[in-house]
Image (cartoon, rainbow, N blue to C red; front, side, top):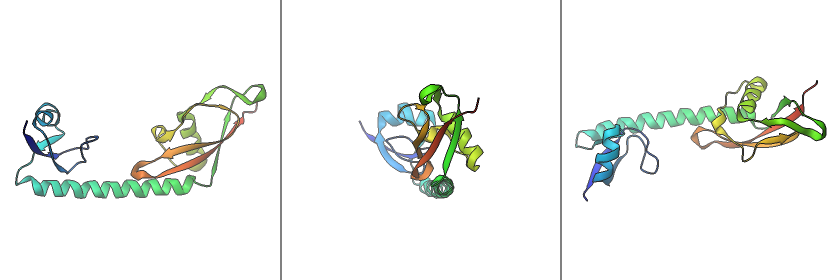
Length: 153
């Protein structure tokens, strides 16, 4: 099979980012990238278009990184308290979900975090202090300190 040079119109996992001109197999280009609109065949005239796409991508990445840094500075060093119903011995009725953590973070600090940015290897089912890994856009990663306390009945 012959390779084809394409300009990516959107990010494709494992292949490249928007604005990249890459060589891919002819079958992959014809069967996946071109029909889905994720790429166009690269020609001499697409070089300028590629440069514009890369510039806008770089600006967006810089904005995302700056926004993520601001959120990280707000949350690192702060302890977010979350009141939940609990039984004897500190066991929760149910567990703390990502949505619960996001609501508590917004109420406590005003910072908006998406629940998909939270890394919870297992559900939180006990009272106490827990560290939750947060992975934001732009590669910003930090630990959020979450204090789960029993709600007053």
